[in-house]
Length: 397
Image (cartoon, rainbow, N blue to C red; front, top):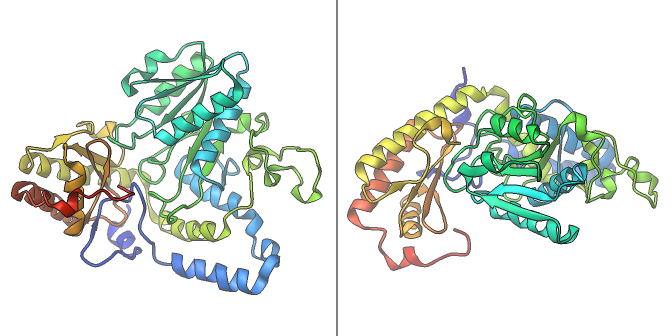
């Protein structure tokens, strides 16, 4: 049984704030600042370049990768860390396409995160006019899988609505059609139970700064199924994906397994932050987390539905079909979110009309959810959102 009172005590939360945006940027866990300070002063400061050996910096992407792997059902040695999520999407797509040389279609859905689609479009342009990205509505993915598809690329949980794909069913259908599958787990890792091994996923990628709380710009991860790991040829064949990087050979030879998916020098300070942030997960059961998340979401939906008739639920009503977020629609969603933030309840907005709220039981209590819902309903009833300062768009929404 997971003690969520204990996990809550492991976060430095600002006084008086209800944070419903951990699905965009996780808060600061206790111990992270100290671990990063140690990496800066005790390792970089005192060890200088010898830190690569003496502080184990070179092994950090694999060691932290194994810790992340446990949260997504990946076996030891199948996940590595580094670079950004967009780069990992590109790597996975390019490798998967090369494994299906007779096919030219990447299939995705219109609910996918735009950056994933942009990377796919860019890769297709590089490979030539025969390659194309084909997108369909999220509900139409299964019927669009056929023998022309080389790669199915999906984000398991829709970043706008929280709608959750059925990973196992779609993988099975794709494999039956001869296609490979790349999963973006940015809104899954640390939010819902994931089993990439049991579902027979081919590739999985994700960021670490949302539910895993590594801090802004934290490193991404990539998983490659063991039976593919020694077959894939990285399109981005960086020196740290080389079999022997310090031999400084002029020709590229891929490292063994997922290590070949390393590209450039790993971000040691941010990996140190993630390593410390992952400590809280040592005491968390993912199924207990999922049950509490659904409980919090259901409470929020019920209160908002009863008290805010002008808001329309954008997320699936059935909790098993959602990730760990709830979204509502309103034409003035941006201003409403700004008014909420001004009163200490932090959610976020996604164009054109989505009010988005993340539910992270590690630090979010039932009392927090009740306060957030009541504040939202009060703002809607009073019209306090309709102030000039709340309509002024900032660069980040």
